[in-house]
Length: 298
Image (tube, rainbow, N blue to C red; front, side, top):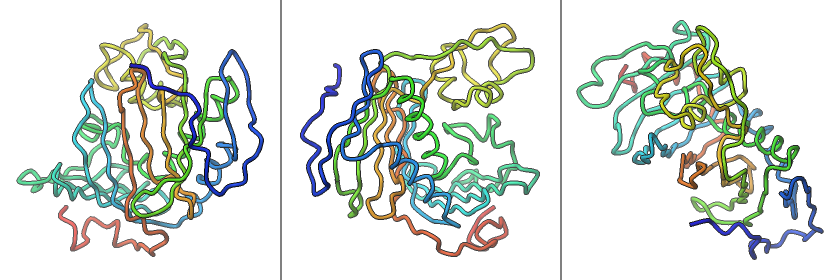
């Protein structure tokens, strides 16, 4: 069943109502009533880059091979430059920990599983098979800033090419706070370019070359199961956009992107990232990213 993408009555609220602006190309338009969605995404990105650190409970769900994985709840600490600590606190993977500090530990991820497997700590390539098992993104892509960069990148490209329609869904309440909700629709079918794999290339190399997410490329190419599961001469589709449909939730006060829902080209929920109990500039120290922290179990 196709979702109704017509403009509804969600334009109410106390904001001053401005005239509608439309960009027409190839029959598609970008509706930017009240506010240019690019400006909101840019402000959100600028704010995220201005933060020295933050903590949150990250709630995430991701789809793998057609199946939506159970919800995960993760205690999340982030500090510049590129320091990430995660501890799983919900029912799924409870007790699992991951720690990454850019430029330290030979740029490897330190991690252990929950339960009895938590007795063994490993240091692994953050883009390797072990680290990426059950994950759409490597740990160095974790955080509000990277997510916002992806949203902004697709909006800029979509508006330029006339491939996106953006709707302001008005103000809603999320975790007891006011949020501004924007919904973006990209082409209904995968639109992109063809890449011929060169000798020695992996999906990580190809993703970096085309400025696209590795797992998105993997997910739209049948028969490719891992980043290294490609051969020289093989043709791959590189999607122009991250997803078919995206719903972004911006905190009305901080303007940060606190939740995003992305849908694939079958309009199935592809992934959700939701930062709850967000605390900004709390003064995280080196101890928060030290595996010898007495509160950690590495």
